[in-house]
Length: 183
Image (cartoon, rainbow, N blue to C red):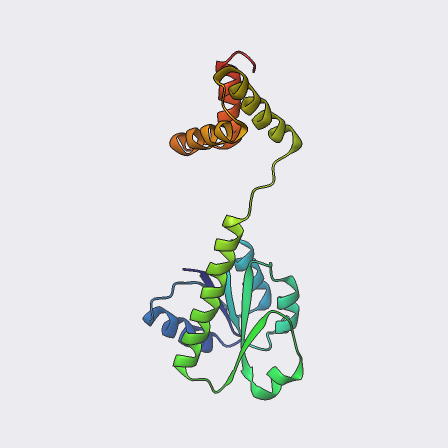
């Protein structure tokens, strides 16, 4: 479940939204009444959703949006006229007065998008430094030379040891090199 920060200039509005979310099983990390408070809370979290109003005493929602880390999404709750005033990329909005089920469905949709993005990032191959690539390559070559493995078999061997030991490919390759007297 994603981190949720609620920010409205009126404390009672923020508390009401927090209460609605809490009753539906969402965990609200912070309730803020200024833009600076919201940004401060967000900077301590890795990702999530900021649910906020249009105007604060110290800034407008658009300024908060500019400083929002890319791992965070913003849900703006404001009057229909305020929402139509500006088109902003990567911003979800709900017009006031809103219905509770609209809020919950929107948060659920945003949470799904965050989960899909996390999954996609986990599936992306990790970028290794040239030095790390050389260590893995040397370990593969050593396994091919001494054990008669094909390149694919050597790679699978290193991968299997990595998964069995809960370590990275580079660490396993370093162990192979040191055990075989090449490290």
